[in-house]
Length: 456
Image (cartoon, rainbow, N blue to C red; front, side, top):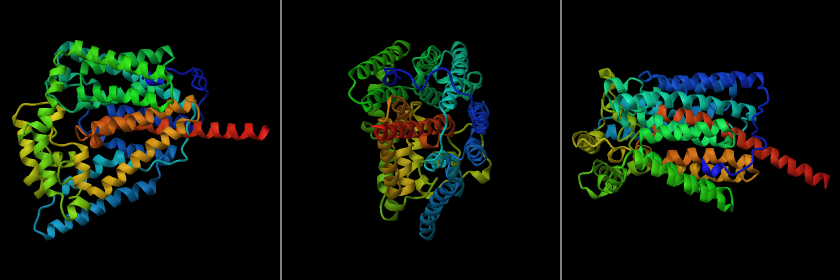
């Protein structure tokens, strides 16, 4: 937020131009999708990627549909090929896990298929920021009530887990709640000079401090100076961003004095303890990554992904039908023990979880796909920085785009974030809009430069 706050707002003024008919349709559809994602119903948010695809087909055309189909079927085909090899060797495959995997990774496939021709107006982006403001105020109010009732940060999760406070059930909703608010902070900070956006960012920061997801807080703090640096040599941005980091950490420490002790214990939870669930899972992954598994992976939903966990009957308080419950040979050999250790030791921290997206992508998709994905991430970040250099307005839009990518990647070292549909769907919508604005602003700046040279 501080990294974005140091610029005048010329194009991003409060006076937003009227939306076109097509933009009004798209805006309404996006609002409906946000409601679906945040609605306190079990698994309802899993339909949101499909809804987003339908919105693109009938209102926005921001997804290249046939590219999305090719990526999705390509990943399924790759998984079926490697599963066929394993079946021939007498191993058992988890077919429900494959189906869950397609559903879980669909938001990532959508982001991989975005159209370069999609554009939105400043008015559209500004109105969406106001929707985020209303969303933040509502979620923070619900979170405050949850804290008053439960006095437990693990049960502060807004409407994402509205009834968890009553049932005292600790779910993934807290993580989804905080991830969404952190991303909304950075998106709203594009207009940080507006009083209402200052209010929204401040309320959202307070809410995430109360909810207290330490790994997300540290990732957010790490990314703020990084965003400031991408704007060029401006020392003030860096100083202010570091100041915000200190303030956020101080607030978190005052609210939860034990956070420093928890952070110091992370190394033991992850690497030092020989029976650490994460260490046992990584050791098993190293053992299975040989031969065809090294290049092609073991198949979607077969090892440590959220799809594999859900189809094993874990990761949810809902009892799945027996037809949807299964485990692969790889899961039984290498993941069952670390999952058991995690469940038995009473450790609720995400740091100790044996499953996280970086591990899942490498083991289930193989090094080839993992390398392509890494290349695409780096290429996109560099492209965003390049487009953001066009003018201050473009840079602010690029900040959100790169924050979302960086935040998602950092969190993917902790948990299976690439499959947390409820966590990433609203930030993904904001990314789609920010990237469209970024391209539009960069093209406008380039056209202005050409016109100026022509006149000269």
